[in-house]
Length: 367
Image (cartoon, rainbow, N blue to C red):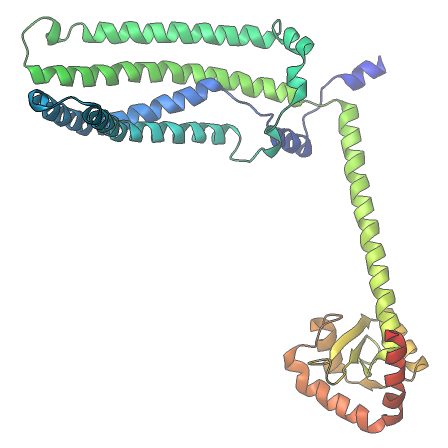
């Protein structure tokens, strides 16, 4: 009984679970919404470009028919005329095609939350499983999609019926009209029919997408055991990262302490801060921070410096600024050049014997 409760998906999905599902391309998707967006884009562009497109096609048709008797039909002229027709129709249809492609991309982006799903691309062998595919034929989703298809059929039929009923009372069918009125009638009738289709498909797309959202949310539900496992894995990762950070810090502290014996000078606060500096002429463009520390670690730096007779200079302002701005392994900030140069000048004059031994000590470290 307890195992069944653990296996039941009763828990809301976590952010990590939803993010991984999004990467796999598992989110609510409705083909009807794509179709509704494409139809709306086509209708909008057609309503704006139809008059100019009709004039362009009309002008081209007039030029063709007026020159028809004088054209000598050959393979070259036929190819030229076909290319001209394709070019003219292309200019008329290109805005509609571009708008439809943009609408399809927009619909897909809205459904995916404008997020990339790289793992959704590629071949997924589990989708080729015959047994799984056969089972889907008798699933609840098939029945729902069948109902949506029926709804689309009735929606299209209703739109066609309404469109025909609306235009059948047009004067075109009951009284003589001018020839130019035929084009206007086709334009308005087309827009009316497409508008009704868009309205019907918009309602169907809303119903379909609502169901896909509900179905995807149900599929994303997690069992209590899955939530526990994910939390355990996440906490384990954080513990491992924390341990790695602690290890890296210990290594860095050990390297700093091992570098103190090769320092030119240790600048102190005198008790709170200690910064070890090195400067080799011809090698360093400016003094380099070998080690720095505060409180207990500063005392360790000072103890090692005293053990190896490294000169120590108490200069609280410089020590504080060096500790705050200096980075281990990098040159000191340029604003401290003058202050540190004065400290090194004093140390070089008063500890000449130390620097004589320091050369051999650094050579041993390099070797």
